Length: 379
Image (cartoon, rainbow, N blue to C red; front, side):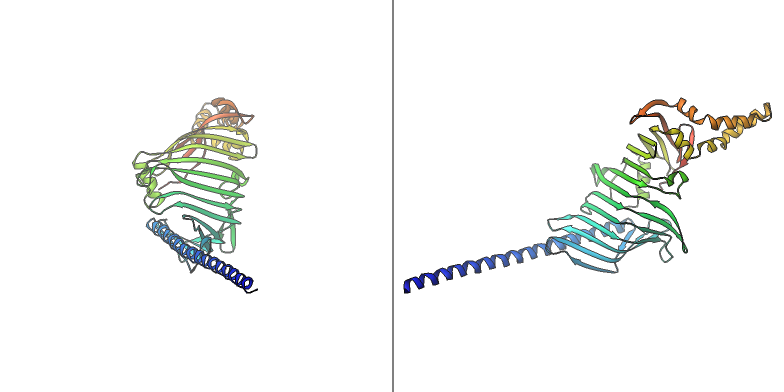
């Protein structure tokens, strides 16, 4: 009886020791993971601080009303309430204010930072009433790399809306179902002749304030490469574009596709920047629905009101009074047919189409001979 009791007691003691060892191992793992999380959190915070310092060198100053750190055990989360940004390099300077900003990094990948923005966002000059108001369902950005060696960055919006605010009145500037912008260093390195690739995607985007033709939603994708940078050190984008111009660099539009209702256009080409900071160059565009596009932008009125048309009409009127007006009417009526004759007839995704040059001359854009608008100066 005593031997059986002794064996049972020894067995219970061994079992108790195993449980004790197991508990100690678990406690050691928890302590080790806590230390690792604290180390990773410090590294992530250093990376965030590094990005803020890099942005500050470009004239973009970020601040928080209050900041907290959490996310244990698997993530590092930095919450910035009453987030603000001042873009001093803009003329005039701009100040952005949002309700909050959540910055997240995984413990095992502190060099990749994901940010989520909570609106609404106000935009205006520092110390003045906001001029623009933005809201969205989701706004998220992702940055990979280190401040000294950035690799790629992305920003995504779901259901963004941007309004111009004047007192109590609002004017819609932009509305979309989805917007994405991606950037990466495609060739070279941060310190040696980087080639920056930028990709844009718009889903159901409209901008009635830009032009009446832009009130109808469009879907668009575009990819471009910027060549001519010496490095990718912190600086405003206006300075980068000046650097590209000084180096005789270029903007390679490798692919663009735009669809609006029955209008569809695809193209590619090369652009440069002149000494005025404006675009020069040409894209080869294939377009289906040319007639609808010309009607939407008011091309007939542009042609009939152009200085060249005035000169031609005046000369015809001197030959026979009233002949100039007839020429104006015919120019408008036969515009689509004339443009189609100038272009190369083809098909695009099963639709009848025409291929034409889209030219940029000191920022002014021409589709074939038709002026369609102008682009702003890049610096």
